[in-house]
Image (cartoon, rainbow, N blue to C red; front, side):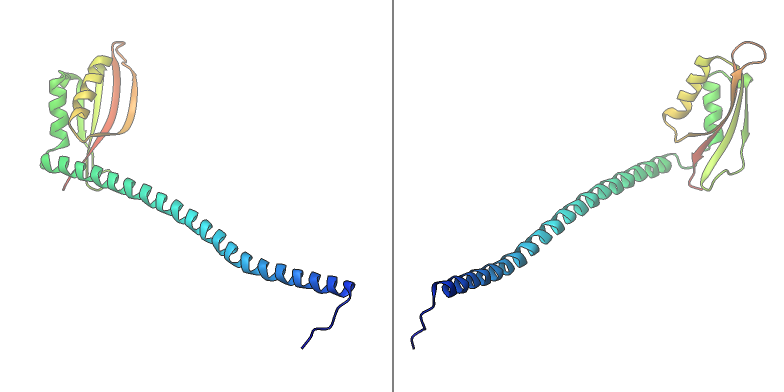
Length: 169
């Protein structure tokens, strides 16, 4: 069977239609995989961000866990230790016994011991030495600084503060 001869104008229209059909089919063939590729790139980038965030969180959890284990080890080493006796020893070491007053505080929080210390007429050096002695090898935290002012006698400082220490009780 022989195809009829087309005129030039008809051949141009047929060629244009064929070219348009090829372009449309080509576009749909390329756009589908291209769109899937772009979506996969977006998902990969999102997954990489999620992985980095998970790794950061993992590091933080592991650091927190190791910090907690270190505190638990310190608590185990000093089990049976009493904050009141620790503070009393530090005050005696600093020679502040006559200018210090200690009071055991009722439990301010669960699993913690608390002691209020009032000092009168102490020098800044004596106060810093006492605090260094208290904080150096003990799990002691300054919970509240009630006051820190010049002494009424005009020599030194008067101060009062509350210390807390975790306990295993």
